[in-house]
Structure formats: structure tokens, C-alpha cells
Image (tube, rainbow, N blue to C red; front, side):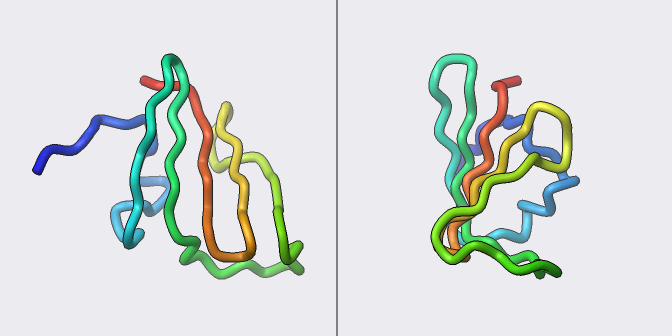
Length: 74
């Protein structure tokens, strides 16, 4: 099995995320995984957008379960 070298470093903790996959579209990357982090605020039940941990990242939380992380490809 081969893995892609992605720009999503260990700061996201995604090495522990189950069932994740990475899609590369030109200069952009989109990582889709189940959200396993504890949220200490009220989350919108349908869609929640926010900045990522690092500059240039956007996180979209869908239905409190699926996390999409958008970034530039490295």
C-alpha cells in the first residue's frame, strides 16, 4: 500500500483518524475523514466552517461527523 505525501502534518493528528482519504485536484488537496476531536463549543448540526490549525487551511464539518480539510497541495 502506498501513501501520498500530503501537506497535512502531524499537527492535525490525522494519523489516528479512521477511514480517511485524500483527493488532489491540481494545486488543491481535500482530505475527508471522520471527526474524532472533542469540540468545546456548540456545533451547527448541518455544516460548520472554520479556519484550520495552520494558515491556508479551511475545515468544514458536515453533520457533526465528517471533516473536510481543504489546502494547497505541497
